[in-house]
Amino acid sequence: MGKFTLSAFADEIDQDLKTQMDVLEQHGIKHIEMRGINGKSLVDYDLDGVREIKRQLDERDFQLSAVGSPIGKIKITDAFEPHLEKFKHTLEIAKLMNAPYIRMFSFFIPHEDDHTDHRDEVIRRWQAFVEAAKGYNIVLLHENEKGIYGDTPEHCHDLLSTLNCDYVKGIFDFANFVQCDVNNYPDAFELLKDYTIYIHIKDAVYSDHHVVPAGEGDGHVKEILTKLYEAGFEGFLSLEPHLWNFKGFDALEEDSPGFHLPEGGAKSFAVAVQALKKLLKQIEK
Image (cartoon, rainbow, N blue to C red; front, top):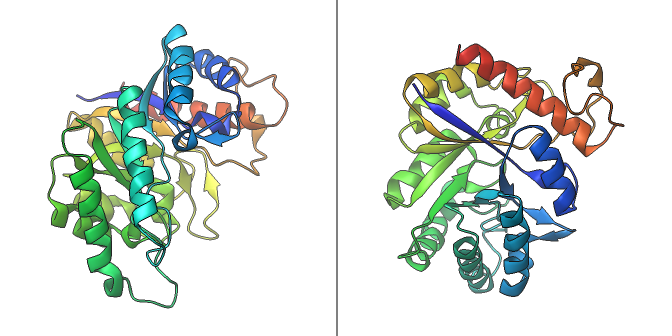
């Protein structure tokens, strides 16, 4: 049987790092996929600033599951060299943070263009990432995202299989695939399972693509997590709630840390945690 470790995009709780850690502790979560802290992206901090963030994390026994970077989240037509330099800085940040992974993307493709028109450039840029990351003992995680080259399972598989690198693997994001009208199970999962080592927990519905708590949408979250658990998957489930306009707070149970909170990031996060823990209780019984 597998073993799931929970992590989270804590900047969806609050921008303040102390508040992030306070709320995560209440939910028994001690890992962060760090994206934003104190109103600024982690990758925009200098290394002294990163060391201070690391000190605060160490004081409370928090670790990073991944650097939630925006690397690769630019247009394929944008200049690459400055972005490659930012990636090299991100590698140094991940090293300082003892983060095993860096979350990344495969470049936005112009709406009017065919993805195949830009495939060679996507591969070339990712090969540059691979070369820069050599020797760091850090795994580069590609996240499927609407609008980038790796938006569908087929494009993700093409990228990952072409690179064929031990330290380039895939994130499976349920909601992002639904928002591309993909059938997550069995189609996407079966195609990508050999590359998938990290999971983003958010769900969505086909009708209008809005995000919902895990298990309440069309992402086949329970089925896929069950398959991973049965296959002995040991890795992170990273909560990325995206419940910006969520109104179903009456679903929160009284023992939830978010039950008495006013509407906002911490309460929305509590909804997301509760939904995931209910699924895991069913899967791990």
